[in-house]
Length: 115
Image (cartoon, rainbow, N blue to C red):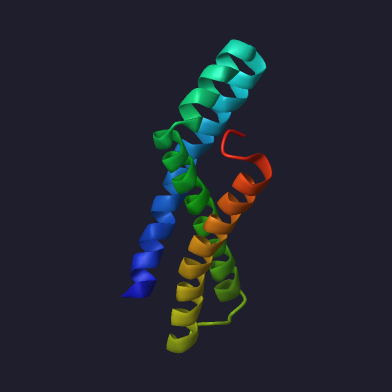
């Protein structure tokens, strides 16, 4: 059951990455367009809603990447027994949450809340 749910989440995060990449492109275009456009993009992305969306994008990116590592392990022929499969899936879920929080803590510590 957990394997099926994480497979679905992996597909959903893959789709979410398309949306997040569009946001990244918009930010880059704003940066290239000049100070006024960049300030506007920074204001939107720096808002509480913008930060929540970026946090979700970070989690989706990390979760999807760890799901890819899990699939690579399976492609090598390992981790197919029930216990190993469950451990890999749980490690991916816990790891994605922990790494997302770590990335954001480091970002806030080095760049500050207004960075």
